[in-house]
Image (cartoon, rainbow, N blue to C red; front, side, top):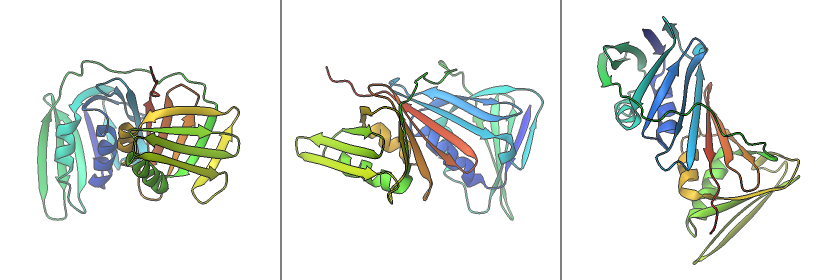
Length: 247
């Protein structure tokens, strides 16, 4: 049994939105340390890893560690109805996830059927990254949108002092160079040059939920999966995306 309360229900809505941008179901592990989830998207091209520490909640009571399988699309639909100034209390009740939204003068309760998740992920990809980039999230969203106008793929190249982004398609080309310590870049640290190409649709889904004004951390190694991560409040969300390999 567990009972978990968040004073701001929209915070949990935003976290689930970030997870649900890639996967349609997932297994949440609830422990004394916090709530975690690791899941692959249906195509097995990308993975999401989520953790929110227990001290992020105004109440966090569990009898023992628990794992609950949830349809994230259905959960997101319920959370999309979150209203201003509502808190959220979650409990496990008779193989259902009980969610009570508490407003200044009202209460609403949903019960969502728990599911058996067919495939759970225990570990993140083991990659020894060569380059680490910290970039402002809002400009990164714009760059990805610009690239999607001409291509379905984007190239990231990181060197000691520079981060290069390019896209090529039948209609044209895009190239951007961002120097270390510029307005957009916060950090570029590369022990070795890293270069890889990624699917833009997946990247758009990954960065969509990054809060305004937050930074995004990108870890790269040539021809290996990338890691993209950012914070939503105290929660940490990491995505892994396999590179595009031409035949």
